[in-house]
Image (cartoon, rainbow, N blue to C red; front, side, top):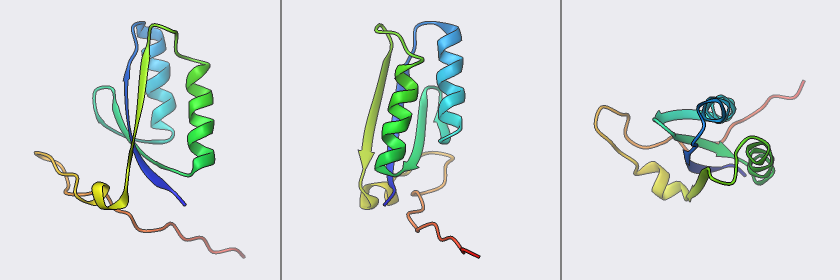
Length: 94
């Protein structure tokens, strides 16, 4: 089961900052500078955490904010779509 997470980061070095942003772009969508939203399974979250540990330094900060489906569906902002879709991804195995 996939869950929404809001990820915020503060990276002190410009090179590491770009690497973190590129890594997160592969997992989700940038909402603002240094803020991403992702929808991941538990395994994917652990993989992302491992990948981030390889990039960030001790003086950097990365925060994961888990959001329940109810909270995610009520996210709103100015000039942004209301809520985040929580429908399940379906696959057709041939």
